Image 1 (cartoon, rainbow, N blue to C red):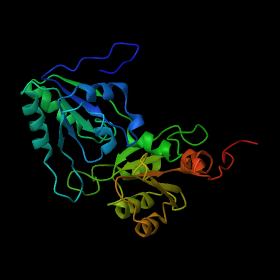
Image 2 (cartoon, rainbow, N blue to C red):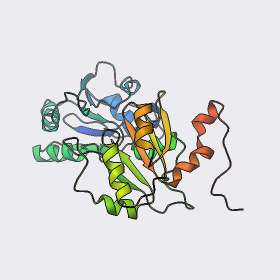
Image 3 (cartoon, rainbow, N blue to C red):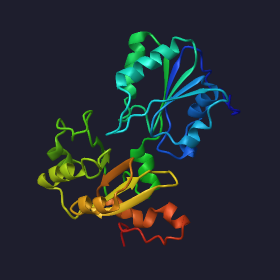
Image 4 (cartoon, rainbow, N blue to C red):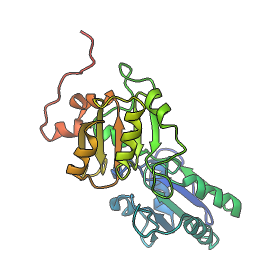
Length: 273
């Protein structure tokens, strides 16, 4: 158990905790996440969980990899959910560790519903989603009152890997000043084509954030019109986030990680004079 000046929940045998690990940096774990790791008998973790986080598991805990990566052999979601049920029925403490937040494009809802159907008690521990934490580590705010009063999170591919066809891309292009698109690089040409066809400006600022909040983080600043060519040249490794909108311009002032490496920050581009 963690030593903190307030009570933390006890992880009971036979329970499953669905825990968000955040975008990568172990320091972004919540206290509930660390408390769960300190008590869990089994940790079932995703491909996007930083390996440094697994070091927080209690000594002797069983670590089970259950990662799903696009284009690579991966366990089926139904099999993962059923395994959680089977493990919980062994009366051990099962922690399902997922990158980001379990309920934001993380299939946490599917796993929770499977636990409910099987009568398995569970706890949900939210995590910092990459659409917030990843942008922050790139020096890009999700919102800024001089730029946008709304931000939209979108997935860049559906279960089969294709661009989600059920989304109204024209409405997204016209209605949201900032788009944050998860898992978009594979389908970037098709997504860009849809946004441009709906009237989004090719000159709009855009950034692709790769391996956000990890030591290998990289940020490609480009525009909607040039991003396909620039992305092909840079070939940013997954996982990668795409953000489209004028908030990207604020990175010149807010790239605090770059400033640690000696990059000079520029004045606020939206400051009224």
